[in-house]
Length: 441
Image (cartoon, rainbow, N blue to C red; front, top):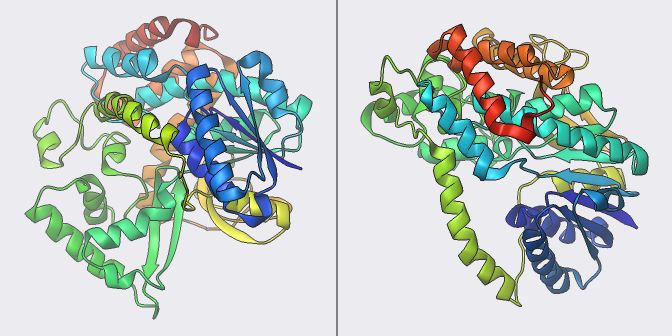
């Protein structure tokens, strides 16, 4: 029987989406689902919700088992065909709070801090040691499994797994699927949605909508550029940074404006505080979301756990599509995060983790050749890739000086702080994270 191990199954809503999709996919319905987490309450909540879904939409064809704690992780993974990773090491309290509050003392403000910036660096460095443990267990009990990584920072974690563990890995995000749809809807161009053709490539959270054409092959970018500039000039909205990308760089990218505001030295600048209002940038957005989500989950979990008629409509997540393609040898196409092996994007080093169109079949994930990006897009990506590669190096060497180098080359951090302040801030963060960063000397 096909086996799917879900690490971080206490992420109940996400587990419901991915595993609900599995139960909606004919080839995957009869499967062994292993739910793993270190939080007993959340693990049990996921089990109860997924058991209800299994009964209502899958005629109990899936077998669901729970595994609590690191001591049971190998059994959760044993003989798995696919491993889904959705962990968050350290959670909101204490680690996310630390990632925001200590940099703030140095005058360094952030919005999301889960992909790049000093917050993204710290998140990667405390997550990779846990993922190394996963990889060691997988080498022992399911060495041929495909690891589907959904945890951020995507490029750093996926890149590390592919370079240093020998585990077959692909990184999966949600933003590629909705990029052009959301853009066209926000510009009143819904009539161009059906039959559109697009190419998206770059790096995670900064992959570029390189081309977009309507069903007849007409280039939509001239009208997109005109409307985006007009909207930015005339009203406040939630996507002003990316619309400014369209105006200044010529291209739109996959992840939200609150994310992209902190991936460069251009928008969050203590010397120009007026930019925060001008581009409607939500500082401290991720902690605010965490607090709201914690409160909302209490009510949501009560409803889900007591809904005996709970059902599921297949989501846009790639996981079940990948599993189906690998399991049945049917060809599918996804946007995946993979190493730049063979220079599928010519502008970047082979060790870079890129987000490109990939074909999937019974032999796995196959990145497609993109070629060169527009020079300004490649340049923007490289400022992020530099920090990503240096963070991966720091995770490998476990050396404090390599962490400092990664922070020094981070675009936003370097634009705001002196080298001395960067050193002190890194030391403060390592100390504050305690056991989560104890391996770095």
